[in-house]
Amino acid sequence: MVEMLIRFFLVVILITMAIQDMKYRGITWYLFPLLAMLLWCSNSNFLFRSFMMNVSFLAVVYVLLSTWLSVKKHVVINITEHHLGLGDILFLLCLTFYFPPFSFFLFYGISFLLVSIVYGAYYLSFKPEDRTIPLAGMQGSILLCAFLISWYLRIDLSDDTLIERCLEFVTVLNPTT
Image (cartoon, rainbow, N blue to C red; front, side):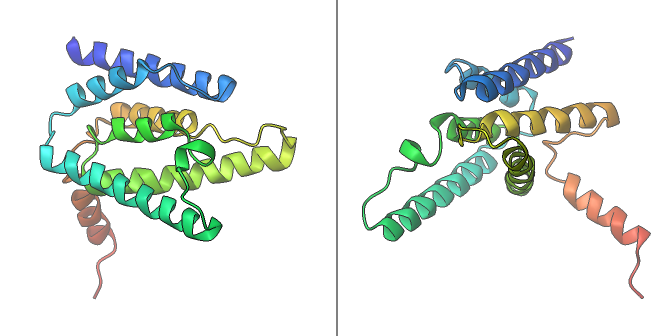
């Protein structure tokens, strides 16, 4: 019963975040702690070490991005001013409570790729005046799709052995001789 309530509220929060970000290019602040709490509660495999590895990965990425932009423009750049919304960073910080490190890295990369493709196609088709990308909203939609598929297939995305088992399965299907 509790698991179903958590799933229901996850769906509601992710849909709300997606709608708010796509419509207003902003997300109500209290949705982030609610999302983080629900993700943490639904992660039966939570390890503080994994959480810290995910946060460290994000910190390194954003420090490198800020450094690169600062060197490129010859002035210190705060990436949250013009390049990345605070909500985008907070959304990814929420995910650190759920995914094990390798899965977090995969979600991060795949979601950025999908957002780039979808928004690129949208931009080329409609040429919107507002050129900002609703990153957190679109990543939230991708996360919602991943959750719905995993719940239907009864797969725990927070299981850090999931990828190892998938690789073993692929090896069984395609043995090297």
